[in-house]
Length: 129
Length: 129
DNA sequence: CTTGACCTTCCCGTCACTGGAACCCCCATT
DNA sequence: AATGGGGGTTCCAGTGACGGGAAGGTCAAG
Image (tube, rainbow over all chains, first blue to last red; front, side):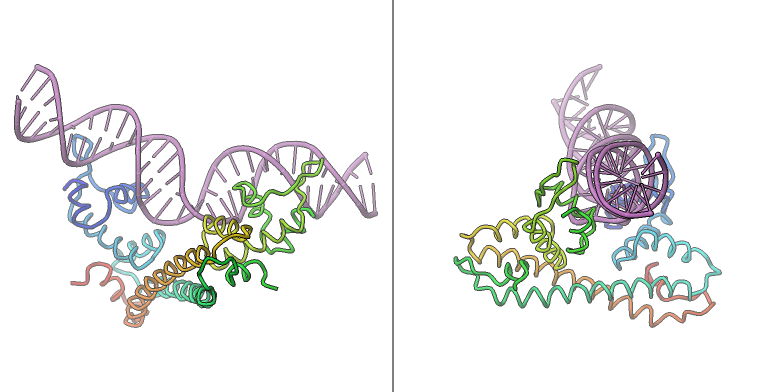
């Protein structure tokens, strides 16, 4: 399979697939003409990577998870730790965003949104005292 | 005031303050020795920027909001639109993260986390069929 | 006079790609 | 045989919002 087919199958842009090869996440073969030739195992890896990225794992996490995936002697505790740490980051991020949202939605609600200049949003940003 | 004092007062790193000058968000004076000299109005702007950034506004949004802040003839509707759009982005981001969190927390709960290799997290990432 | 804290500019690195240029390859049509 | 178009390739630059660190100038204190 050429990169275009793989892109269609995995949903990953060709650019992304080349990038993943660049950083040694995958190692596709090469045809005589220099084209990348992907085997089923490469496609499988790319699907794995796509799903892990969709769950927000960093590339380095993906590298770790892939290594564990391919290591038959892994301990599930190692996988769980990576996932739990990432989950904690996501929870923290959600909390940050919720705090922003709460403040912002109060301000937006308080703003008349007409053609007059008075604006509680700017008052708040300006120090509101 | 020199940059160090301003950094202490605003809580912004000196690097960030220099960066904001670089991209023309602030225009501090210069002393004869080349040091930046900050007036109260600069500090006020930096506090404004710090608060806007803390609410997650992009630098370009901050530039827009600053311009509106300084425009006495602004319409609050313009401010409100910027804030409402940003709020929508935050809501979207929260929704994305919640979806990740839900999937991930299920997987983490399902994983034994012991020294055996069986792991529902990797099964899911690998296509789980 | 020297030390050390502060300031300056400049350049590279972050993260995970994306866009674009310049070029090669293969198949089909004229 | 030439041409056109749709693949593919590499390499370089840019994204956002800074942070790290080098190399060097400035200033007050001891």
